[in-house]
Length: 130
Image 1 (cartoon, rainbow, N blue to C red):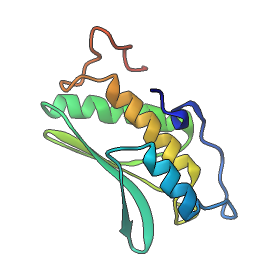
Image 2 (image 1 turned 120 degrees about the vertical axis):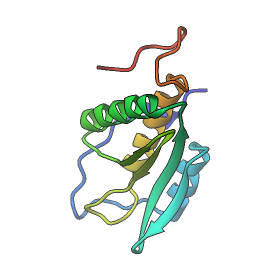
Image 3 (image 1 turned 180 degrees about the vertical axis):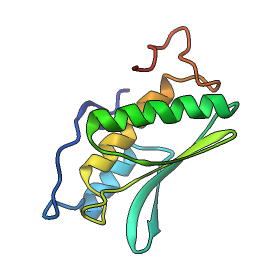
Image 4 (image 1 turned 135 degrees about the vertical axis):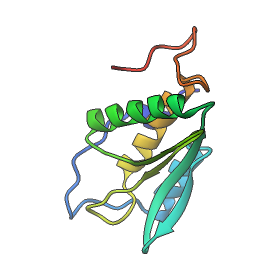
């Protein structure tokens, strides 16, 4: 089943943008298994860990996330390690969560589903965007 959030696009958000309400957050989180909400310095953020076979695969996934962030004009924080990538998303200008954060998380999940553990696109998967 396709995630409806992944079909949306991120929008420009200013300081007066609408923060996600607790009810919206609950509804969005139901669509994002594997993601969790953390709080850092009083700011809620989305976080998920992705595992890979090696550093090269993790780097390839990080690069794909970077391209996606550029396309959506919404940029996650990524930490790339030997066997994985940790992705953290929040809307910096709001110091809170916004619908954009959940959209980007869903799109990152879609990238992950198209990527094999070694970082390559599988035979039955579309290649990662350049």
